[in-house]
Amino acid sequence: MMANQHDTGELSPGLELLLDRYVEFLVVDKGSANNTREAYQRDIRRYAAHLTGQGIRTIDGVRIEHVRRHIVALAEAGLAPASIARAISAVRGLHKFAMVEGDAPGDPSENVQLPKRLRVLPDVLSVTQVAAILEAPMADTDPRRAHFVLRDRAILEMLYATGMRISELRTLHTSQLLFEYGLVRVIGKGNKERLVPVGQTAQEWAEEYRRRARPLLIKRGQRSDDIFFLNSRGGSLSRNALWKMTRAYAAAAGVVADVHPHTFRHSFATHLLEGGADLRAVQEMLGHEDITTTQIYTHIDREYLREVHRTFHPRG
Image (cartoon, rainbow, N blue to C red):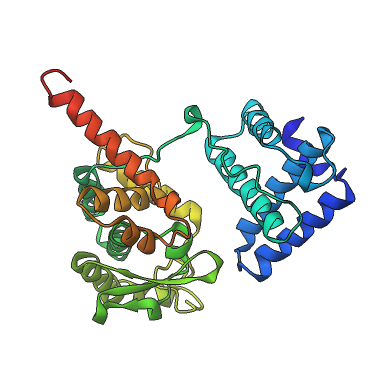
């Protein structure tokens, strides 16, 4: 089966050596995070197995049609659009590396695009929906849960105010809050740092949580390791807990969309661009290495404009 090809290990020595060198490049030169490296390693091994099945022994023998056949095979194997997009990114990275290193005269993947039918735009909330979700924790008036209410409100405000990834919020340290400058120092993928502005409202809720709720959570646990947002045992929140939290508050707010922590990141970027923000400024705030990753939010913006036109224009 296609999904298991990367487990065969039946690669030519030339491809095997190239893959090892590329993974080393991801670790040493690019400083890729472990989960990113592992995902890319799976993707390129699956790709190399596909090439081997087509009789390709070395990277310089790959042509654009081989890359296209691989993408079709991924789609036929039932991979999610996001997984296919990541696989294409991994393949492009491998070919670019091979070209720079002198293993191939060119990059056959350069002009390969993700099929339009596989393009999936991320879910984005309206400003009204975001506001309703941010207010949802305050409906819990149980005094025994007051510290959790403050924490959850501060988390939701921080997600929307900064566009942080869930992993970045989970590991956010108190020392990374630079509120005197209106900034948060975010540690992103590959341990890369970026400074992200944070609005006054999010700052106020974070300070309220730090002053009134966080000390109670610290007392419950053994150590906090300076993690800012704590669970009931004084440790960092799990990804699952944050997913459940955002879904629960979305449901309480009457928002029927599939809401998860990353939805706030998508909404953050889209609302900035809809308001006229510069694309490169948004790229910097999101921590995207490649601006084409950020450009997906301009597609969302155009979809919104088309929907407005269809709805309100007399001949829409």
